[in-house]
Image 1: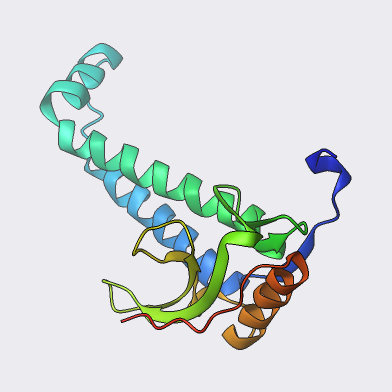
Image 2: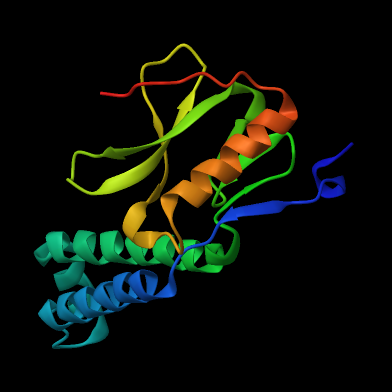
Amino acid sequence: MTNADRNMVVVARLRAAPLVAWQALCALLLGMLLTRLHWGGDPLDALRNMVFGQPLVLLGIAAVLTLWAYWIGVWRRRHAYVRHDGVMLYRGSSARWPLSLVRDVVVARGNSGLESLRLVVDDDSEVTRELAKLYLLDGAPEVVRDGVMFAVARVGGRLEPVTVH
């Protein structure tokens, strides 16, 4: 059986408003950084000034473009951000875990102070994996937790109560 043979079941969608806000913020930052560049003179002098005279502004532009590309990718996956195919649990296009190793889904506050839905995976590590920030979720976190745990129960994974500090 290949991955294309499996039917995907959507567990969580993302709200559009925060994603649009992040993209607008990236556009605003990019505009501010582009206005900070000195474009005067001929094209060769302008390029030389940008590369050697203002390297931090160029690094900032590269960072903002990278961040913007990330949020565009999240935007493209917003309708099926957390999903499973009966064997694996997928988050966006970047992370996946076998459903048989999933132990629990908990709500925890991260280092930034924002609450997120986190996955407890039985892979001999003490770290939980982030599924999604709560402010991005389109729906209640309990519904997402129940959807993931239902998929785990169907696979035959162990359901254990887990405490995360």
